[in-house]
Length: 134
Image (cartoon, rainbow, N blue to C red; front, side):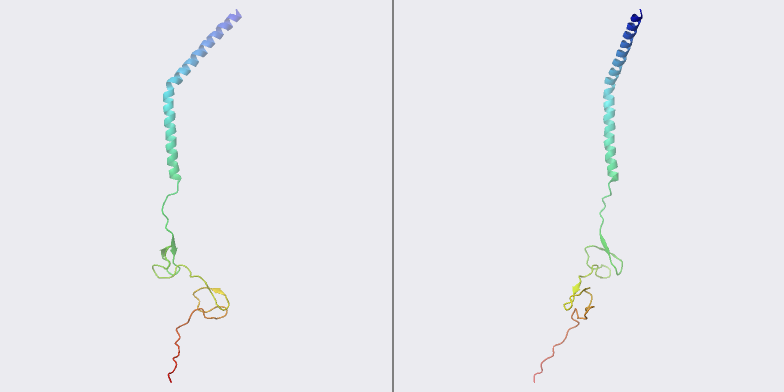
């Protein structure tokens, strides 16, 4: 008699389990379309949000114009300019020059060599003396 009760109980549990399993599977089939739509909608929104966030994180693409500031008057000049547009000052230093006598290198603005005193530029026009027609 004990075996009968166990067998009967086992059959009832099997039926309950099978019924619950069937209901679960049936509900899954019915809601699969809805869940698929929800999952697709959620995934789509995720991609949209990811694209939006990545756009927000990008640095702005503003064109930055490079300028050089004049040391004399302080005005801003385009980097292509060689001279200041306000005061005419040279914006870039001129290349250095070398003394022909002692080979010392110095700024091109110097008129005489700082080491040996040799004239680096012609100081003025000199007149040639005319030969007298005597």
